[in-house]
Image (cartoon, rainbow, N blue to C red):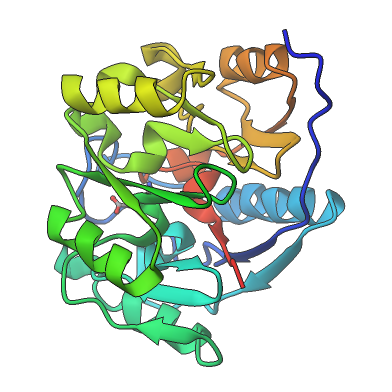
Length: 273
Ligand code: ARG
């Protein structure tokens, strides 16, 4: 139990409405093209996530959804920004490739770097401004290429720690690890290689440790403002874990987005100007 009061920091986010959301291809183990998605419900649930963030005092910008890009609702994958600089995404699968172009259009007034290497934005990158003066955690193994980690470090000028993901169910870093505030994280150790686990234990001795059930409930796919931790309704046990660490869990229902293999964090990109 923590006795320090957790202070929220006002954030700016980018989201994309799931108007054209379907599961028409399967590029991760959660996607089942035989189970229909309730598109109207997806929009309703997404809208509640958006208003939850706004009600907490945050700003949410919107990206126009594009017909034929059903995964565009997972806005976290489109880029990764730190200190006003943006490292663009380059998707692993051709079905999502055009999303990078839509995101690039949004960052016109930013310092934007086109990537040479495959990387899926905030899906595989997390930033902790208060850890060692600003630390980037980066996942690889399923989507992002390790060479993109070095490229991100060159573009963003912050140290990048490479972490190997080993479980296909947790194919993006943001399905297995999340920043709770500027310096601490929560993660599911078994999603990482033994060496990556050691690195995380060394860097984050106070991390909130999640278990497989938390990860399978997409409980690590959360968005935190440093105090409020927004996570889906299935992840109740995870909510209690962050509460025990002094944070305030805020649950939102996102059953439809889970059919595409994502939840809260996948739908929200943070804009760090
Ligand atoms: N269907 C999408 C894909 O497989 C889901 C992306 C989830 N996004 C995330 N940030 N984990 O690419």
